[in-house]
Amino acid sequence: MSTIFEIGAEGRHGLRLPELDFDEKPIEELLSPELIRKEDPKLPEVSQIEVVRHYTKLSKMNYGVDDGIYPLGSCTMKYNPRINEETARLPQFAYAHPFQSEEFSQGCLQLMHELSQILCKIAGLDAITLQPVAGAHGELTGMLLIKKYFEKRGELQKRKKILLPDSAHGTNPASAAALGFEVVELKSNERGLVDLEALKAQVDETVAGLMITNPNTLGLFEEDILHITETIHDVGGFVYYDGANLNAIVGRARPGDMGVDIMHYNLHKTFTTPHGGGGPGAGPIAVVKTLAPYLPVPLINKSKKGDEYFFDCARPDSIGKIHSFYGNFGMLVRAYTYIRIMGDEGLRAISTNAVLNANYMLHRLKSVYKAPFDRVCKHEFVITSKGMNEHLRTLDIAKRLIDFGVHPSSIYFPLIVPEVMMVEPTETVSKKEMDYFVDALLQIAKEMKENPEILKSAPHVTPVKRLDDVRAAREPVLRA
Ligand SMILES: *Cc1c(COP(=O)(O)O)cnc(C)c1O
View 1: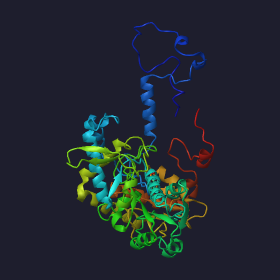
View 2: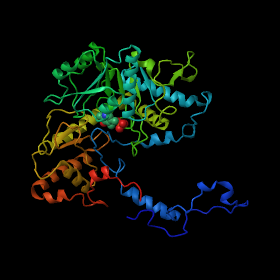
View 3: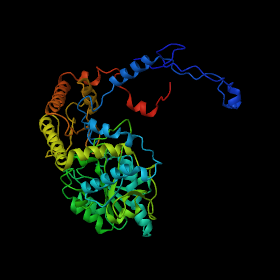
View 4: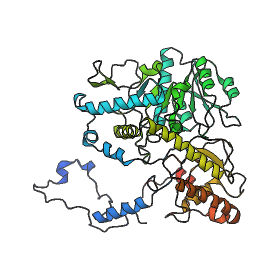
């Protein structure tokens, strides 16, 4: 396919501007000489229809949740209901200006206040900020709260360590290390869970906190979670819950009841706001009472009389702002819409069906691909291609899956299982779609024996063949 610079022709343009009804001034009168370009910039010269066709073609080369199954483990790529878009586009929300006064923003404030309360209830926690714009941003905010707490108590010098399991998402250690904490990895036991002995060996008064995902990134519920959180609390540390896997337990179990002190929600995972290309996301964090004074400003509050919402800025211990204004407001509208439509029963149905679907796929796949932890999983599971054909890698399987017209699952994460594939169907796929995906994987397993070359050269049906991803990352070419 051509780039936009290769189509069109000299002098062609996309819209006709009206004739000037005033005298044009020479550019030299308007700008100082060093600001004036010597040559015209090389811009595409294209007609309107050429632009439309170009981007329509490009969009058809893409694959998204609206195309079909997208079982990217850990990412919860589920369908984004269109009603979310409708409410987000209501002019009262879409055109609300962030500098608008409280008086003229009561509807927006009410929505944020109600969403805050609902999310706290889902988590079983006391207070919340909607400001962080990604899960990773929520993690960083959570670590800032812990840091501030110990700073206030004069214990920061001593509280150096953040513990996390070796199955943790890469953002966890990054968030802790970014604030100067020493990251200590806990190895998982043979059942894929936090090794309690390894935990015990690290727990002392130098621990500021533990970051944990439950169910973890292997799709397994940490059965000893109560013991784990108690162990951390016993030495005065905090437990941070990475809520990326909330889809597995929403409406059924609450992190607050597990002894968690801080958690983030990924509204773009569990609560169906679009993932987008790197954003905009939303990663609110909820906390226990002890940490509430440190939350970012402003919080959204309701007056004592209950008739007015306001920005609560008078919070002297706050860590300050961590994003402009109030976070990605449009995403808050979408998540609020989704939650209100689902209701209690609907929220419970999410986890029921997400877990059922994952177990169905695991059950069908494990006769051919090895399941390193062969037990009932939660909303996602891991399988491995190790031992199936020593000349092929899981990467080859993922590339071959593209030829079947589906999006591959996550690969090589979590890091503790070699040649891993991590599958998360979510609750919004049908049995037929899951069967198609499983059949494709079973077919590929056959090809691994009978026709390995077809895997090595995959994908075959895409506009570009296999890319050199390492080179793309090391030597990116960002401009033509
Ligand atoms: C997605 C994810 C994150 C990070 O969330 P972002 O919103 O992408 O920043 C953290 N932990 C886990 C387990 C995840 O799956």
